[in-house]
Image (cartoon, rainbow, N blue to C red; front, side):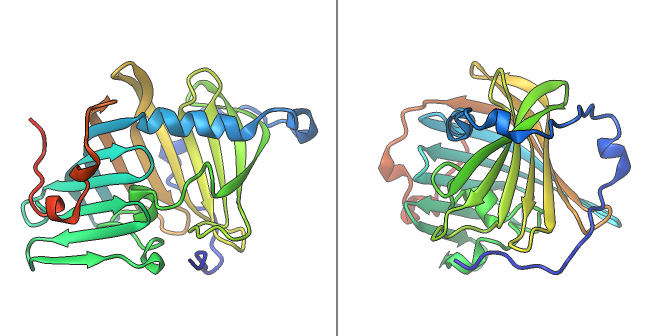
Length: 266
């Protein structure tokens, strides 16, 4: 997959979103962190997000300078091989579904009764008009196996002391981003902030996690904001309503046939 290439852009984030976030000074001497296992930090954070399997309900608000749009979805996961996302609102999009099964990704569009297999080139495109990419939602690439990891320092985000970890793609990895910086809290391994850069090292998106809540015994951010760097007044907010882990989901649940008829759990 070709890495995302975008024109140079300047960091431009709505001031009120970040004005209240306490930030500590990042340590300049990164050599003191060389003995920390950065890959294990990322692995634990990633494992916490998905568990062995999961089912969650999420509301989405797409914010633009002249309008906002609301969506709702439910999602099933199993390991890092299987994902199913079902749109439940608004009515015009309800029933649309996305499936990841191994390295294959599919989209069911009920209004035209058509199933589309997404090519790798579409992973960097925005998902359903949001500021998240297709890769962000169906997680084709893995932040654990497709990147080299290095702890750069410590920083406080949302009142939590975090490791700041740099993710650089492996030479042959088929990934969207040229670099990712992620902030993972040192106690509960929550991902509280991430910055996504293109291969020319220009900031494209910033994701912020907030309002941590306990979901099925795991403390996780209940709100995620994805904010484009070069589009003032644009952002997408995902609010997790419920999230259950380690459910008995069979592999054959994640099929193209089931994607066309799957329904949200009651």
